[in-house]
Image 1: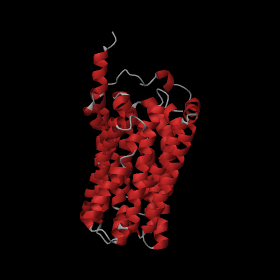
Image 2: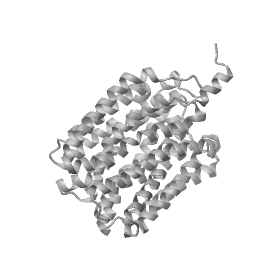
Image 3: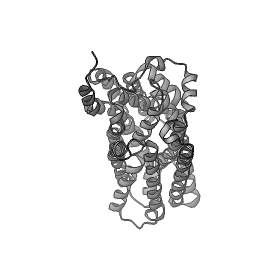
Image 4: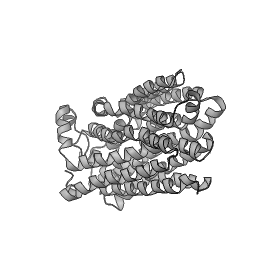
Length: 421
């Protein structure tokens, strides 16, 4: 018997918090490791004697491999299911981070970063698919924000706690322990997800026939949708911002402003606190105030990110803001920059055909990771040439607005914002 309208309404209005929290642990595991390692880059830089541009290569190598396999990882996620995808991604990242702690030279770490990126590629499409399985479209942007936002606590722990532990015990043993924790979380997800998941029968749930469609047919269908492509192009702007800031923030604080790695890590931690709050907040704002106009919400976030980047480049970089003010501005910057992913992935998966959430997420990640790959070394190179990061911040602000604004202009000119095509 079909569910009654009252039951369906109750289902649509309910957030499955237990499974959302479980889904979030996949992000907690990988972000703790990846962002924790990046936050300790001043310690790594001191040990290996590398430049800021070379330090930026870590994020580029990591996301290069993640970009190459993104679409295939999305397809694999659709095939193997959210539970196995999240578990496999956590275990792969954890094992690679353990090996980071044993690397004798920085070039080895760059090689390990390539493999780590492959493991991480399974996480985002698997998490996104898990949210779609369990939450109706009317609450999805908020739910996606919860899953991604709570997952950001891993980055918070990594950036605030790991540098302090690294200064005391050395970065190598700290990363070994963190990597083993990721493996443990992956095994926990594998054992627990099936008992907590409450797959819904719904308006836009997955379709076995769609999931079994040919890979080429799925890609052609996605890329024929103008709204999807414009959202993906906007993802390039977010990739530029997220990678530049997370990859260089501690170096900016340490080298330009003179703060210790621990204090720099605390400020970066505040950035991630802002993201934890920002993702569910912007999701709810888009669901309720923007009435589901996803692209408009994304463009708003891009403008706010660019505005605050200018503040960092023109004011903070000149030493005009005391440390507590920097921490507060970092949290606000994270509220905008890291408030984006949940809404971004909601946008692209809602445009995708039923059963193709993983592939849609993978394609979107390829676009966003173009920015991720390019940004860190360029951001660092500008700082190497000028001697400070001030100009890097300004260039980031301009690039963010130009890319996202161009996509929004094309979308509105063609009338694709409402049609979804």
